[in-house]
Amino acid sequence: MRIATMATGGIGGFLAVKLTNAGHEIATIARGAHLEAIREAGLTLDSLTGTETVRPWMATDRPHDVGPVDAILFGVKGDALEEAARACLPMIGPDTVVVPFLNGVEASDRLTRILPERNVANGVARVSTTISAPGVIRQTGAFNSFTFAERDSRPSARIDALREAINAAGSSAPHTDDIVRDLWTKFVLFSAMSGVTAAARCTLHEIRSLPDLTRLYKATVTETAAIGRALGVALDPDLEAQVWTSVEGLPDAMRASTAIDLEHGRPLEIDWVSGAAARLAQKAGIPAPVNSTLYAVLLPHKNGSV
Image 1 (cartoon, helix red, strand yellow):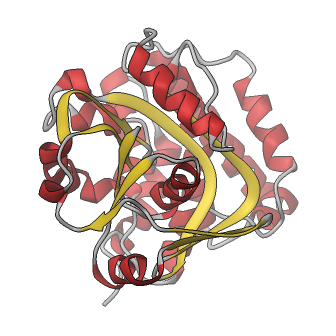
Image 2 (spheres, rainbow, N blue to C red):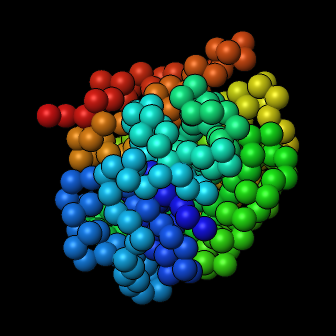
């Protein structure tokens, strides 16, 4: 397959390495020092299983040079969606599928305001990766799973082809019959992880060991799940218990990317996490005091520090 990664950050870079090694033509869209490093020395993935370096088919900041592709793996920060989506237009042919892997639950809907709806799918990534240096992606933890489907979850040949490619490349792309449920299942966990670890400047160790933080975390999970159900999402009845069980098995030092961005003075994606939960609760006609408070506490830091 011919696939573009827009952009080649943690998620796009991880998949670009795996898919290039599997023989696919990958166009890595990047910029600045990261792009130059990929051009000069290739794209490297460091993980617990070792180091892999590949030479992608193309590394560029000019999507016009790529032309139409079979699929676009779309993974950018929420605030960068509109600009990145417009940049994708030269790479979209009649059957191109654009799979968003962003935090939150609104990316697919937002993409359809810019890209042809027939080209937009929906997806959720479960992998912990970051750009550790220009041209280098670091994966922490062994888990990596990419679930995606057409927006209405109907079967399609293009989704099957991309799923088969990712599975054959050594990653995981499981089948789903309800991508919206899967997206919200992660959102329920991430809204709490993001909001609490950032607002409290804490790790999971403090959340599990301090009763007040435990109650706050669980309240966020319960509230976000209630919002999803009020909007008609078919979440598992015991999802809240499932989330806490998974939290109990995660590393003590774990915290959300939001907390890390806050520590380093970078802009925060809170409009698409706590802010989105509050906004969607209003749409559903129910209160969301916990997510609204977490959003308000983090709002002064939304644009990062100079």
